[in-house]
Length: 353
Image (cartoon, rainbow, N blue to C red; front, top):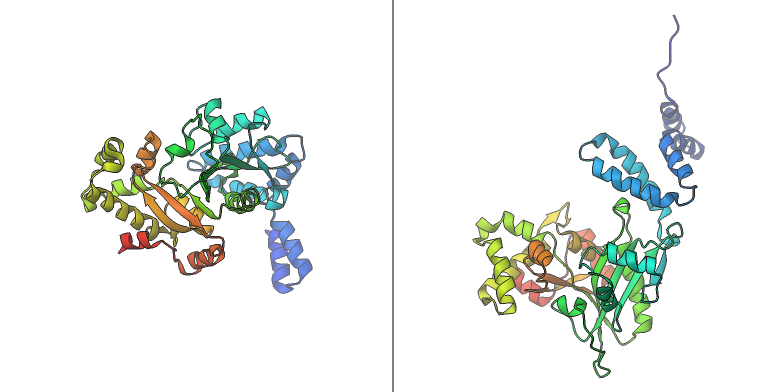
């Protein structure tokens, strides 16, 4: 009788490391457990333009996962490679302006996912005198941005998106003191890079870049959507005796002149949603999770700030200012992840009482 061993190389390497936990045994174990497909991904990536192809391949893979969960291990391996290939050391920050290559400008129009850019004239407005745009690029995808942020220089903190993005032929009044830098749109460009973090690095580097160009603008805030609020509100409308459809109509028709008691009730509910609703100890709303995780604080919530169909659909027209206080970012970040604490302004704190 011939006895066949069931020990695979990975089992043997695991036993060897267990019996003799030395560095060389650990290296052998690491090599033994690496899936052969990882070597395939690396070899594929050596071909011309292969990086972009692999990114698109993962985008297709992510669509398949709900019906084919056994492919999760393939996604994990591919994502791990992307985290290495797209690490911060390889990324190049570029300012996007009207003189940027046409291919880049076309992609900015295509990839904008927060506030739609309706053609070249809209884009010209986004790149006007007091508007800026910055993007991260990778050497393997030279004219294809990975993520970009749109920025406005304003006098004071804005409470609505329309003045920032509407077309205008006006020129900047030289007597207006621009003291605020507003991040009003951040767009990740490639679904295949989901889970590979760029935005936090982008904001921090843009803060440095804008600070050099506009040293008098000392305040950094966002004007952000609340993509999960209407869905959460709909799930709790019976409990709070509200009708989300009616709220959208009120916001659309009455805007800032809506009944004060209605406005206050919804603002309080939104504050509770942003601060108290959690998923695995972090904010349930994805945009809140991003900015609060970066060390921002919750400064203000605005009624009828986005009256576009998208804004009314996802947040009944509300928008949020997150404040990036450069002296408090690290402290806020640590408090958020270590104690689950969210720093809020006095106004928001009153709504939470």
